[in-house]
Image: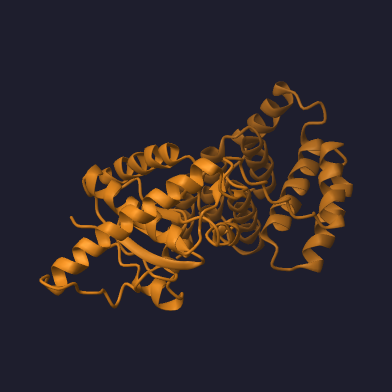
Length: 343
């Protein structure tokens, strides 16, 4: 597949250097067709610029802080755009579902290390970075594009031969040199963005949980949820604090024998009696036996009605919220089972 090294979008927005014709108006010499002259001129210009770039590299281009290879995400996109003002950035879009993706990334990684900072390779996982992928208008993988002074330009789609990739990069670096982009990356990793500062109520709640002061944690997260009613994380922490409080009452020694007593009491109690089964479900959930806790409470929902049924359903929803991130498939199955019982 021939590369789409169409840099006309870039050239149209930048004035050509003195003595260098724009890509849209090649000069034609006597005795040559326009196509022959264009091809010869392009090769000559590329060779001349490549030599100039090599001289500048050997002399030491302007140092640009940043790694030769990085993973491009929405969080560091602005930093990468800034880098592209001084150094071309090649973005390679890949997916675990595309066998050719890994090969293309490896080929570019090798080139990035060979060029030692003349361009930056930014890999984009299309499975997890849908916003970045959409911003570039990419709809197939693998795909390569380049950022030059903030402007995205297509390179190619699919997996070209290595010689084709090398030719495309020669042209790209030659064009970059024409427009003064002679920076050299120093290979240093970009600083990680500082984590957002936690609200005071969050920090108080987390400190309380660490100190096993579950009532103080409950109050803090209840306040956090009051401050921001849509805060799912605060809601999960509130459910967790309340669970720990119940467990302190059920099994003060936090011992296996104490847990067994709670489970044994529920085993002797019909499903129509709510509280012993809520207690047993708490124990099962706390010991990581999510499926057992879900199955027990779904059975209670099926066997009860009115307030008892609502109580079992509410406890299930609390468990779902706490377990969904760690065990999404198990929660999905339990939600389906609960829906079948309710409707």
